[in-house]
Amino acid sequence: MTSATTTRTAAPLLGPAESRIVWLLLAAAFVAILNETTMGVAIPHLIDDLGITALSAQWLTTAFMLTMAVVIPITGFLLRRFTTRQVFITAMSLFSLGTLIALLAPGFSVLLVARVVQAMGTAIMMPLLMTTLMTIVPPQSRGRMMGRVSIVMSLAPAIGPTLSGVLLETLNWRWIFGIVLPIALLALGMGARWIHNIGESTRAPIDVLSIVLSAFGFGGIVYGLSQIGGAAAHGTTAADSAAQSSSTVALVVSFVVGLVALGLFLWRQVRLQKADDALLDLRVFRDRNFSLAIGQMALLSLAFFGTITVLPLYMQRALGHTALETGLAVLPGSLLMGLAGPFIGRIYDARGTRVLLVPGAILAVSVLWLFSATFTIDTPLWFIVIAQVFLSLGLALSFTPLFTASLGSLQPRFYSYGSAVLGTVQQVAGAAGIAVMIAIMSAVSASAQDGGATEAVAEAQGAHSAFLLAAIISLPLLIGAFLIKKPADAPAGEGMPAGH
Image 1 (spheres, rainbow, N blue to C red):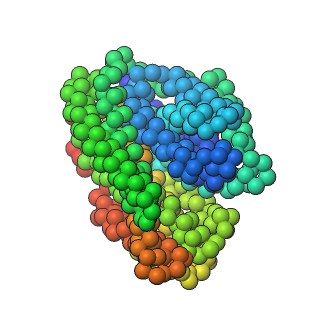
Image 2 (image 1 turned 120 degrees about the horizontal axis):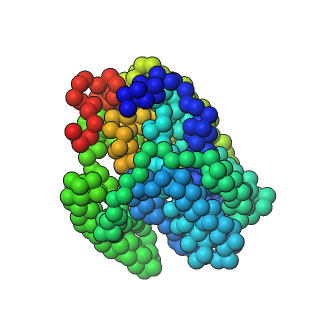
Image 3 (image 1 turned 60 degrees about the vertical axis):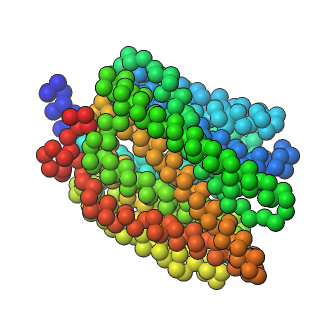
């Protein structure tokens, strides 16, 4: 064991077989995230083509988020229970099947089922990628490899809406899935041939009760978050009031059920982990560095996902820019965020976390406050582009070291659980940021219009309030940036593996 460990640590590069696995997983994750980000632009077309309401169409996104929230917490157990090859083939098979069903869907109901199947595959893919990287990449090279993950997480959302827009302008919405399907099938075939098992699998039994509690807990909270916009809606007709009342009831019931189920789920995991049978082992939080990094990631996700959702709405509704102009305006920042990943990863490997997290937090917080102070009805497009570029740079300086430092703080047998926790926190925090900021923007905008403001001015005021909330949420990032350490740099005892 000592000899093998020494050899692996001394080798800075991966062998050909391991490199193939990493690139296959990166490609599969890229396709999955690309698919996830194409749907928003397609919603108006789906409403017309399928003859559905906007509320029904929104379920294509809500159902995807719900499925992700339910499946991701389970992936920690799945990655320990089954081999890497089995998990990859299952994930890509589900994603490919969902994509095929979506391509051939005769109507809304079948398309909704397809989105759920797609989400099941997508939810497994990112934790699988993270766990595999942490297992096969030596510690001194992890930053650089996580930088490649940043490329996937940044470029796919940047390209997705643009690709969707081009396909919708020239063909129809089915081609969104038609383009993705052959790539997914190619990745599935190559993975079935080349991917071998990484690490050791266990034979622990699956705890069905934990799965049920996880589904109601995380699913209930995410569904409740999706209802915040409807509960905060402002209308004058009887139908508007009835819809608002229904959303409020759904929000309260979902949160109550979700919180109770989540509490029972956590209690059960604490009991099961004593015998190493937990669905999601919570001993990962015994490591201080991991917990701090996860908290920092939650705050970033809250502020970031809410902001990038509000920004296009502000640009189109308040400033009158087209969807194409909006997409092109945010593209430079997204490209910079992705392309900077490997360079930031190398800096992490050489210098640690603080040299990246501190300037990253200062940049992100400063730009969010700039958004809240300067984005008005008269803000020029060039100013938004520059501000968004600096925000993206701040986020790029933060995400790669947080990914690497959080999982690197854990013992190898906890990598899969750490990846599941990381994915769950991102999903729930991102959903919360989007829901709350959209609700605030809508409520403030409606109130301003009631006060006599024009629609454009009202939308600008609503966006200002949402950006202000994001700026306030981001303030603790300035403290956390100084506290998180590169695991190898942590004092003795502080970076000890979870569970000891």
